[in-house]
Length: 153
Image (cartoon, rainbow, N blue to C red; front, side):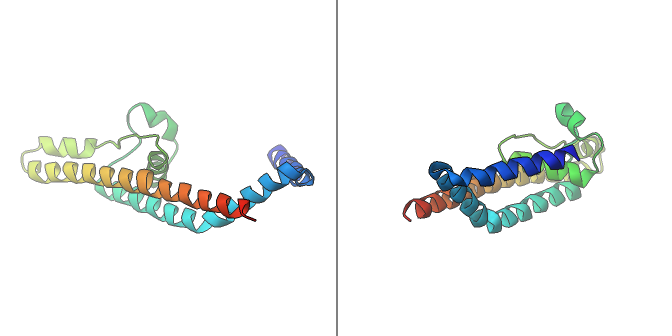
């Protein structure tokens, strides 16, 4: 209940800031930027869910190593979702491929395990390039366009 109260207070203070001219411009700019990025965020979320699902299907898991404590109570899809989202924002963490490393030790699965290890690395590269480099640059362009449009008014 206290959290809801604090949120309500800060939202109310935010609306009072519109009474000042400088804060009014800033408030209007933030509201316009949020409206402009809604469609982008849905598209971004689509790619995060896609890569989280792919990692889960391939047996790659972010619940390993030093970040394991961050995800102790989460299910594998939730862990992969948060891991992909963090990677998409620049907090790069490589998902664990222990499942395939164990399978590679077995003689009959050596070829398939090597294939999937390399395929996971290809997916990691594609994930990083698409979400971190391309999509976040689109986000910067959208916010910049909103800023230019608001300043030209």
